[in-house]
Structures are given as structure tokens and as C-alpha cells.
Image (tube, rainbow, N blue to C red; front, side, top):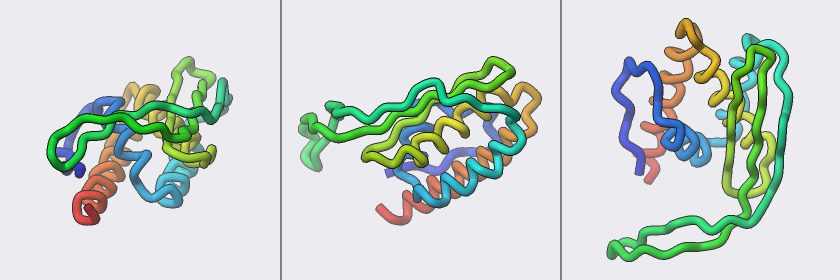
Length: 133
């Protein structure tokens, strides 16, 4: 499902980041985001909601359909002005918050101190998902 990233990379596409982290093991994402959050200073949850969304689906024969699913979205803001966005299928607010923290960390990491660590985590998650599916 996911192809491994070629490291080193300065930035990952936000859509790819959100997709990868929403499919990754929620407990691993939460634990990793907690480590990263310690170095980000004060974070504020700007919004969080769970809603019904229409999502695209491609069948094995190439046909395109949509399905409805509950998704949870969280937006966070840091005191340095960066924002992060996280979304996951289901009602796990902590998973969506963890994704938002990692998105914010990549946006706020102007000197690249966290980017390498985050990209290595993303690479490992992508490889696990590729082998699982």
C-alpha cells in the first residue's frame, strides 16, 4: 500500500504524511508524538471534531467509488506560529492529535533538528505497512 520513503528528505507531502500516519499503529504514533511534543513548547488545540466524511475508494478492478466513514480531525497551534493538522478514520482523538503534533513539528522545524527523526519514524511505519498489506 505504501512505498518506503527515500531518506534523506527535507519534507514529505502533507497528504502523504496524513495518510501514512492515519494507517500506522495508533499507539506507536501517539508514543512518538509525545516524545516530539516535549521539544515544541506550548501547544494549543484550536479545533477538534468528529464528523461523517465521504472518502474515495478504488476497488481491485480499478473502479472508483466512495464510502462514508467517521473521521476525527484536530488542528493545533504553537506559540511560534506554526499549525498542525491531523485526521484519522474513527473516533480516536488522541491519534488525530498525535498526527497533528507531528505535522506541526515538521512545519515548525526550520533548522531541521526534528525532521530527520520524524522522517526515520515515517520510513519505519511505511515499511511496516508495506509488509502488512
